Image (cartoon, rainbow, N blue to C red; front, side):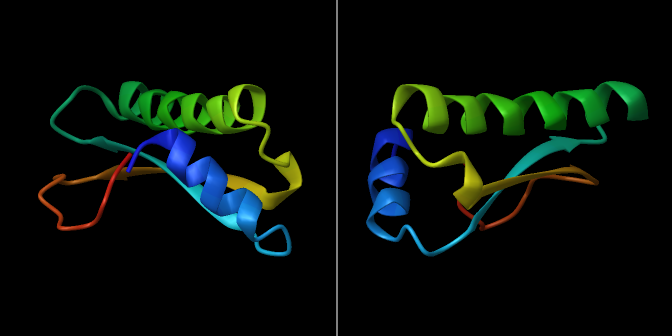
Length: 77
């Protein structure tokens, strides 16, 4: 699924709220670097959804996570 498809899905449910989570793993660099990287990733998705695809910013919340490893079965964008 690409961001345009996610935007369409979000706009289909205007009463719902969605969380955008930016991830970075601890193997990438320092704690400060990874925190900043995870924030930048979440912001990039947020800005694209709002600016390019017209998603209502009030539906979106951002969070940032640094994880030990990204070997997860979760879907990531």
